[in-house]
Image (tube, rainbow, N blue to C red):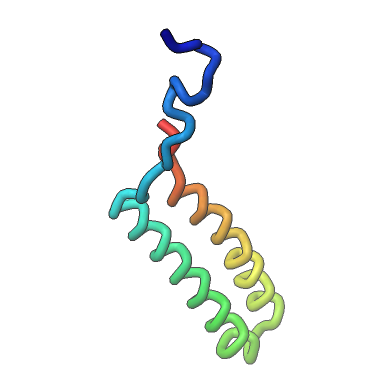
Length: 77
C-alpha cells in the first residue's frame, strides 16, 4: 500500500521528458527573432535613430523569458 502523501507514488521523481517539436520550433523562432532584433538595432537602426534601437533592444530583452515559458508550457502535466 502506498502513502498518498509520498511524492514517489504520484510520479514526482519522473523526468519531464523532451518538449514537443512544436514548442521547440516556437522557442527557436522566438530566440531567432531576439538575435535578429539585437543585430538590426545596433548595426543598422542606430545609424538613424538611437532611441528606436534602444526600444528594439528592450523588446529583444523581453523575448527570452517568454520563449522559456513557451518551451516549458504544459510539461508538468
